[in-house]
Length: 271
Image (cartoon, rainbow, N blue to C red; front, side, top):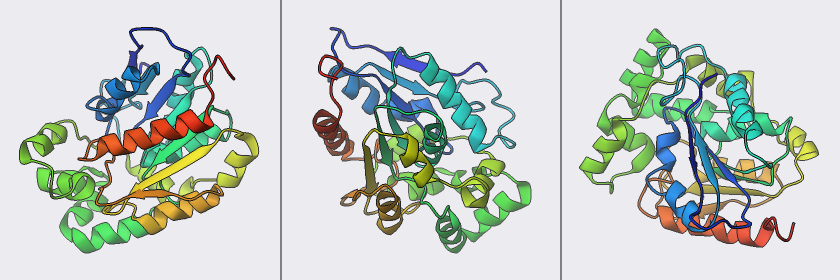
């Protein structure tokens, strides 16, 4: 599978372990490029960000509808296998489920989950979208396409960015927003849910769970459900929406992750 993979190395080589960024639904590797990729590289981390098949510049862009979470997990496995050591995974939204499916088979240094899919799936999200946007919700289900749910700048803002992001910035990000697989949605709903117990049985590395208090996709109570499943407590950032890596305040999120990595994940020189 020909996948878009963005790879950046620090100017001066360091002993930091590599980071692999895993995007969420409707997104691609682009969502990490505005802030997180250059910021983590500046802190000495070799960084990789992929776009799943049928996302971004990856193969299959015209055939999104039938893709499954297991296929996206295979994409993560493909990219991780090309990195010379087990990476730190930093995943977002649907990407946290993809990452957990990968982790059912392969360990990593650590896993950071931003706005994760809750263990019980996306039933709550589905009902919230139905209440807030019944027209787009109906069109999505009649056409078996998820794009109508985010198909205007206003809908994209509502789902991901919040009211305070400037219109020009929303428009710039909206230009990258794409359709998402309806079968992947069914996987998140019921067919292929997270299995934290299975991940914890294999994954020895630490887990960090983060969310935003203004997230309309996965609100804090659902983020805390994921944290409890991994025997930890989520950090909730006040006023932050779903796209923690793009909204105002992204640097607070990145600095929190970097501090946590510094305390919990040794560099290669001390591993």
